[in-house]
Structure formats: structure tokens, C-alpha cells
Amino acid sequence: MSTFKAPKGTYDLIPPDSATYLAVREAIAAPLRNSGYGYIETPGFENVELFARGVGESTDIVTKEMYAFETKGGDRLALRPEGTASVLRAALEANLHKAGNLPVKLWYSGSYYRYERPQKGRYRHFSQVGAEAIGAEDPALDAELIILADQAYRSLGLRNFRILLNSLGDKECRPVYRAALQDFLRGLDLDEDTLRRSEINPLRVLDDKRDAVQKQLVGAPLLRDYLCDGCKTYHEEVRELITAAGVSFEDDPKLVRGLDYYTRTTFEFVHDGLGSQSAVGGGGRYDGLSEMIGGPALPSVGWALGVDRTVLALEAEGVELALPASTSVFAVPLGEEARRVLFAKVTELRKVGIAADFSFGGKGLKGAMKNANRSGARYTLVAGERDLAEGVVQLKDMESGEQVAIGVNEVVAELESRLG
Ligand code: AMP
View: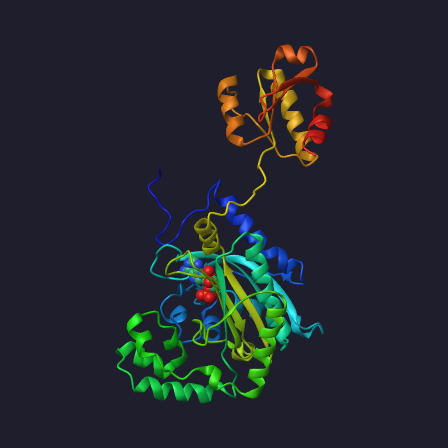
């Protein structure tokens, strides 16, 4: 062990578990790639102002959790706490919205940073795969994203997750509701922080996880009773489309989510095996965000799924992903000439796409066979001087234990046919 440890709230992804993380990322990305989403990658840090404006000055993410710093050159930057603002910033900067092909559909995968109180499922460095569809107001687009996330989770074998759905209204009906909610909240016995929040961002009080607060919120006015006709029709169509796709969801009239920029459709994916950090993903429509960061009006919708929590959800359900063995063939040379011959064979096998590894460090047979076992390889190639003198190597099937001698020149063809 070195003097150093991973910083508080972070952890390392190391083999063999890291393979599960990669597979989860891949499983979330696959349906997106298959649905017209192009890959985008943005920097790990941005101008702090982008998040202040884009995520919301009054959110916990911006006020408490952001890793903000000043560079030697005097720039005010922040490690990205989420993906949407950056992706929209990049799309606007590259004028993707002007290419005449709306919506611009993008997906991303990366690290995000929030200075949170660490606990299981809540880290200071975590990983998300996300999708954004920019520049179209169409309930089918909201439905598409929800369906694709459902497909991603199901393809991983997850079953015990639920989709919570709500509409947050738009700039026409939300202010009316906001005022009604504020009136209601003013009549409650709330602590000072919560009172302040109810003045700045009353909807977020609904999201308070504390029982004492939730008890007082019984009877609070609900947005669904205030939705304007446009929002009502829109939401009804989203619900119909996902229902028709066979995706089940629950209406959750109190779902607001922690970011300020959401309008109309909001949704969250929760997993019941995760305890308090139950949200495995979330998203929604953010029609006003582009204008908030200085762009044109571009109604958009997106989601981000947490990779860390999805892995925890798999563990909670006892799902073992069928990961391909990382090594199919392991070569064990006994002696100098065998080293040269088998190293060349390993290179050839790799060239034809067979995952092969080699016993490095001049180990004896016993140690090398231990490595072969640990590698998970289906076949081992063993060769000593006597084998080579006869022009053969020993091919051992690690499952059956069967061993046969095959000609040095037949090795690659034989393994190709055996491994299909
Ligand atoms: P949010 O933008 O907060 O809705 O986050 C979207 C998803 O990212 C959540 O549903 C989580 O799965 C994941 N996530 C957010 N914050 C954290 C964190 N601190 N640690 C681990 N995962 C997180």
C-alpha cells in the first residue's frame, strides 16, 4: 500500500469489477446508438457561470456541491456536476442546431463531480451516461427517451426499478401554481432554511425527503391541477405513447427533481433495492435552458443514468452480467525457444481477434499454469523443447482437462475453429 488513498467520496474501478461498469455503460449506450444519437464529449470543467445559470443559482448542486475554483490565469471554472448544460453549450457553440436537422440527438458518458456527503450510492466522483434531444417539442421525443432508458435497464436484466412521471408545466401555468404553493407553504411550521427555499424555489420543498416535512405537505396544491391545456395535452400524449410501448410507469405528482431547468415532462428511475439513494437515473424536458445560457429558444429533453447506482442495483437484484471471458487462450512456454514460438502465436491469435495472453516473467510450469487458470482462459498452449523438436505444441482444454498435441502451424486455425 502506498501513503495515499483515493480521496474521500471516491473509489477506484479495478478488475474484475470494472468489467461490470464498462458493460453497464455499453448497455445504456447501445439503445441510443441504435436510435440516431451521436456521441459527444465535452470538457470535465466549464466556466462556473454556465452551471450557475444553467443548473440554477438556488440549487444544492450549485450552492453547496460544486467544485469551483479559480485558475492561475484568473478564470472561474467548475468541475462539471452534471452533463446537460455542457452538452447544450457545446451544441450551441458548434451551431449544431443550425444544420437544419432538428432535433439534434446526442449521447455522452463521463465523470461528474459533486461535493456531497458520501454514503453508499452517493459519491463525490461518479459516472453517468446521458442523452439529450435538442430543438424539438414533440411528446414522441420525451417518450422515446423514457422507452430507451427502460430498454437499457431491461437489457441488463434489471427488474425492480420503477419509472416515476410528472409534468412541471411551462412558463404559462407554472408561475400560477408556484404562487399557490407559496401561499400554502407560508402557512406551515417550517424551519428557516426551508422557509427560505419556499421563497426562492418552492417546488423543491415538495422534494424534501424528511418525514416531518412530508407530513405537513399533505394537502399541498399539486401542479397537475394547475396545468394549462397545452401542458395537459402534451403530458397525456407522452403517457399514451409510453403505455403503448408496453413501458409501465407511475404518476408522481410530487416529483420535481433537483435542477431548476425542467419544464413539462420530468421523470425519475428508482430502484427499490438501493435504500435512501434510490434514484438510478432521471431527466426531463428543459425548454427554457438554451435561452438561460444565452442561446435561442430550443425546446429539448434528456436524461442521465447513474452508472455507479446501476451497478449497485444489479448487485441488489443478484444479476450477474454474462461478460465475455477476457482471455480465451493462455500460452505457457517452457524454455527460450518456446518463448519465441509461443509469443509469435499469441500475436497471431490476437491479430485474428482471439483474446490471448502469455506467461511473462519466465515462470516455471506450476506458476504459469496457475496464471493460466486465473486468466479464465478456455485453452492453454504449452510447449517445451521436446514438443518443438517434434513440431507440435500441447493444446489443453481447461474445461474438460483434455490435452492434444497439434502442429505448430495448425495452432491458429485449430483455435479459430474451436472458439467459433
Ligand atoms: P441527477 O442529475 O442528480 O438527477 O443525477 C442523475 C443520476 O446520476 C442519479 O439518478 C444517480 O444515479 C446519479 N448520481 C447523481 N449524483 C450522484 C452521486 N453523488 N453519486 C452517485 N451517483 C449520482
